[in-house]
Image: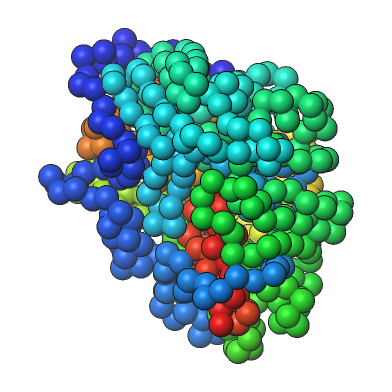
Length: 569
């Protein structure tokens, strides 16, 4: 899948890595100018985003987008709450949990070796301790007495089996790329697993807090066979277990009273599949639905003004982009990509498509992801980015120069929400103004989700709107997507120099060294417009007055957020 590292990236003389049980933030929270930035660094990142590049304090229609990490804690337990999903997960198999609907549900049922916190740091999860005796070895000591939902007790063998499923070609795992540098995963004790790497990999320990690090019961998964993830239980350890799944309608989670940690405050969480944005909003306004993430941007003002609950915003580590899926046609010429970028009305899109709760950007990575970077790295990463102010005449000239005037492109859109539909419309309008014929192909929300996992769904498609959240607090999480063979590298970008820089950054455990390399990658990706960056966008969550406790940050993708939701009064 990937090319081997250059000899210079193989650093066997590096000192042993520290014990992460004492400093669980280390994989994602580096040092800056000699000062330790642990949990407070994540909050500093939120402040940096708000001050430098985050959403405006007064958005469209008076909506405010002040960032917070979480909502007020619940005051009591609750029998149940209902939550909105914009699409039904095609499966809840953790190996292919690579989009919002799947992870929003799965994070409460299946747990990982490590855990993301609402402050976007990493702490121990099913592993009580993670340590690295040398740069190519990670040792995970497991919590004793952890029970799966079927009553079995977790062992090291379950961990080895679960991580092994991520690398099995039969599973076509979305997380296989995370394991590209893994040489072996072995049980080195009843409650200890040792991962040996082919070369140092600063990203691997961070990804163990995502769905890549999920642990499920070997017996449970094998018993389910090919039906695993679609029917029956998930054989996991989380505070909730999978209950009734009425296809196309709802997914119920039931509290697991044998949970090893703090038990969930709600006895049941019911996820309602509402693909129409208006229907989701109306269900919240009527009280039929208690809350939801990814609130339709066109509903921000209505929900805020209704007085029935609170609309919150948190750090999403998210950028809205135009994903380039085909470089064999006109978009293979960088002049055409630059022309589209120059013609795009980003400010208009932020106002209309994001409800004013966003910020125009020319970077594929968010400012918050660089909160710990030295000034030199920031300068390399962000100085000289492609302009974000429209220049139609220059864009027309580039299209003409490339011989692309009148050429046809196909862009996918979907009625998920205005952030998707209006971006597609904005791109089409930009193309029309500069001589390109951009045709929109409307697909269902479920078909839109399939774009990420099914190559056939991308057949005949040149572009589609892509809001990408970082799964770890490291810019490389996004930038590695343009390496040869990367999972999201749909257009097939391949460049030896870029690949070597990715390998060097991955091998660099020292944050300053890594961020300097990543800054160069950010510059290259922006210069070549491998995707077209549009805006930074915070996470949104609405809670009615009945419930509280949900985190507001993108951490809900990989930690059991629903366990904290309970009665507001």
